Image (cartoon, rainbow, N blue to C red; front, side, top):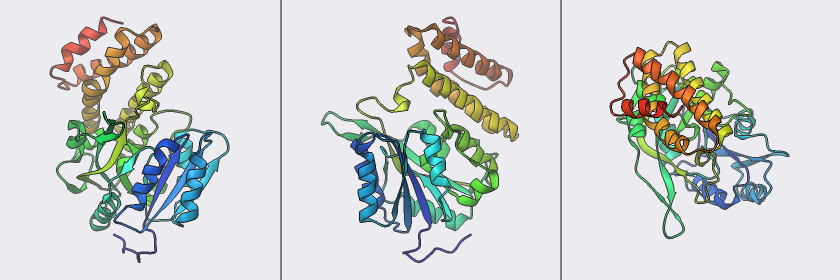
Length: 326
């Protein structure tokens, strides 16, 4: 447990990495300024942008001392940008916000108060997609079933063994954690890889003494109208390879920690949720390397699901039918 500081003493640092996100960063920074919890600081990491991102970050820092700007002269990737921010954190809690996403107004108050009350090492909340609408803007969607399973109902002081479904919440920006957890576990983001938050999430869960989950929506996760975000480019073979490797590595973290129930829950979720959209892409993909990479991954996980009697329900038939493609 920690004592809440005076309002002018920051309790939480939010690391905001961004590269060429000027179109969206204004809204992300505004969502920080709108927080009902004022005791925050933000480290804005401009990862070698060629657009106006750097100047937007600089103006934010000039107008509000809670913002600090760090600039990478050349792009180093999201993992490296987050690690740069982590090296500068001097508050009890740390969280992340991608510069094209939006925090809900009560997010930081709800997350910090939860950790302060429970004494846990990490808290994770719910999130929704922010999708393009017909008016040229963005509209938040509903909480998806796998997010709900990870975060509902509220649980304070739980563990991965007691609540294995939390392993399905693998994004960096839906969480707040104690800085000492990162230092105690030697946790860093992988660099030079995409989907770097999947391994980090499982390391946080397996290293934490206790975990809190709350059903509150804390982030609106943007699905860009121009399709330029990494999560919208899974038809590219290099992106697919990093995605599959990240899922494998996350499961391996759970296995190494002896978290069998969480590993089983994660395997089931990957096969039921992550794989079917990839199979649809693979059917008509022009590059056989895509089908081979996906086939190796699916067949390996499906074999483990069979061996461990992990129930996949209707997905089992679809996966077996998909295997005929490879």
